[in-house]
Length: 129
Image 1 (cartoon, rainbow, N blue to C red):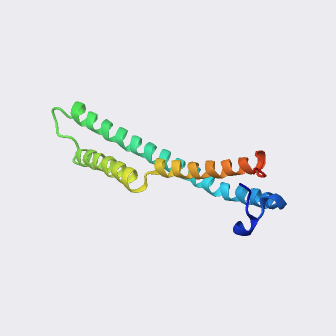
Image 2 (image 1 turned 60 degrees about the horizontal axis):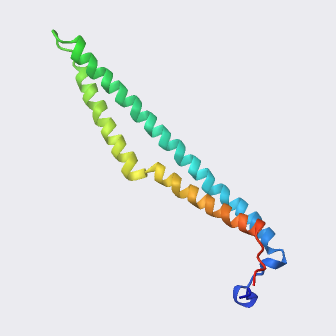
């Protein structure tokens, strides 16, 4: 079966593939940018959660070990409870609302699809019958 130019309006055989290759290069930069953007936010949220969880664990250990005989300062248990609640809220918010890792995979898939189209236009013979 041959490519019907009248139905598709544009012929890839007359140099149109060069214009399309240029377009694909520019189109693939946007998903690449957003994939890196979401990856950075994913790593940032995970590091923030790790930091807050470590502070909460240190406060809990301090309350449990250092203040056995006397009561701890009033701010320490409140801070520990707040930090624990913050860890739970941030992880629920980041994983359910934004899902940065999922968004990163989506943009990587889009970038890879553009790359596949570009490779087909560059390396394969379009004049198949």
